[in-house]
Amino acid sequence: IDKATTATQKTEKTEPKKDETDVVVDVAVDSARSNNPDLPELRVVEVKIINEGWARVVLEPVDRSTDAATWYMKKESGKWTVFDFGTAIMPENHPEAPKELFD
Picture 1 (cartoon, rainbow, N blue to C red):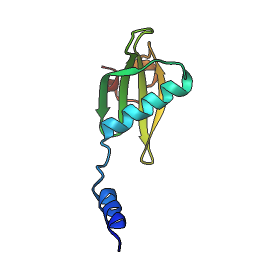
Picture 2 (cartoon, helix red, strand yellow):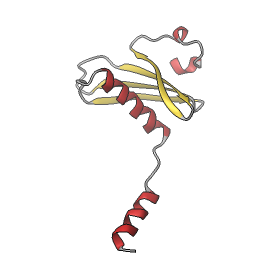
Picture 3 (cartoon, rainbow, N blue to C red):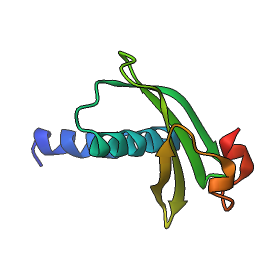
Picture 4 (cartoon, helix red, strand yellow):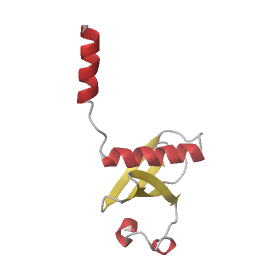
């Protein structure tokens, strides 16, 4: 075995797993960019994960060129999926979601 192969294998084994907060932020940012590819750099304002199956992420442009918006997600079959996003989403819009997701 040459040293390059051994070093690569060790790197792969010790690579840290992303935690849920990083994952939901990535999903929200990807959703924002797919909706508006021209968005400037985004800043995470808030992340809330409830019961390991529901999440809310608030993002705003660093330059404040638009208002902050909120992404709501549900984890289904091990994958986070955006079920709604915007600036004025109310709990009554999604009665299946835990009320505290909107607090």
